[in-house]
Amino acid sequence: LHVLNSVQMQAHPSFAFLLRSLDLHYRERVKLDGRHDFVGFMSQHADAVVSHQWQNEQNIVYLDALYGGYPLVHNSPWLR
Image (cartoon, rainbow, N blue to C red; front, side, top):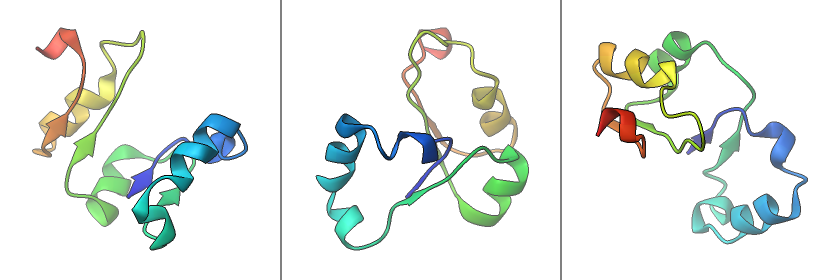
């Protein structure tokens, strides 16, 4: 599990609690990352995109994922 744009959140108490509650964390299967070039990152590290947005319903990453043929799990009313 790669969590992009999350390195700065690892010290936040709520995020740290959530992270420690995951079995994947204890199996050392979670990687916190900074920002990345979407196309380059996906081609090397991922097969699908799971995205949760808050007050950003039209995030361009949705279109990048769909154009690239990647499955997209999202909560955007814009793409309902």
